[in-house]
Length: 313
Image 1 (cartoon, helix red, strand yellow):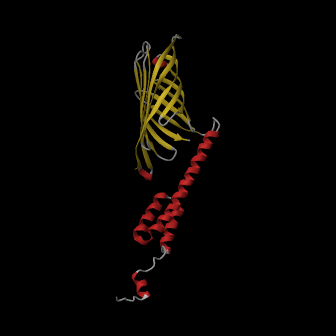
Image 2 (cartoon, rainbow, N blue to C red; image 1 turned 45 degrees about the vertical axis):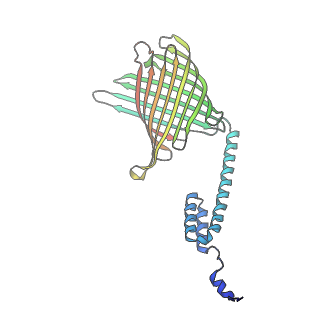
Image 3 (cartoon, one colour; image 1 turned 90 degrees about the vertical axis):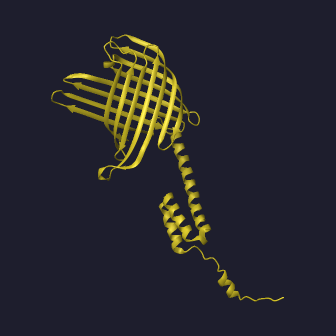
């Protein structure tokens, strides 16, 4: 038997010991991690793996440390947010937006009109609350031709994944539709059919009680049923206006039907909203108000197109 002696130096040249991750590569990954931008870090890590295949394990370990810390921080933030919502008073944590629009025309016809809306929302752990108030006023040739007001409060309780209970208190006044005031109370169940970043759709239904006071002074009380739908669709983000203004376009729709034996009403709102800045946006909407049994002298369907400036707060 013959034995071949191989020098130790030759073995070292044939299978060199793996060096540590090069300092410039480590510095590049550390700099990316310092930004806290998960997407940027993932890109740098992928490039580092491709250019340093012998150090993939060490690069992955550095990335895993960041991901673990990120997950822990998000969990802590979520816990703190839930606790803040749970312990907040009723008058705290409200957010909202106001809308204002107006027009004036002179010449063959003189017209002036204003429209304003305010919406407030409060999100809790299980409860959410929504307040709305809207007013429309118009004069044509010195005569009032539109005067409509609405106020509504809607609490909501999340029962389970997607399933919720709602309540509704609503007040309306529109003498051009033949009534001085109309109050509605409703409660029931709803379901969130879609809930993603760009698309939301929910439906709700329940019994309702409605009291209408007509211009004549007569009052009518009735039991009814309510069916509602809320739809929001973010068409795109990153669209651009002039002056490098970022724009986010959103399509939204809502429909509420109250059905009783004497009068069925439908309120349908379709809107397109363009975000100009973090707080300011424009909104174009089209509203249909339908009454199956209008007061004498009133028509069954009113439509209104609005263009408003929206300010969020």
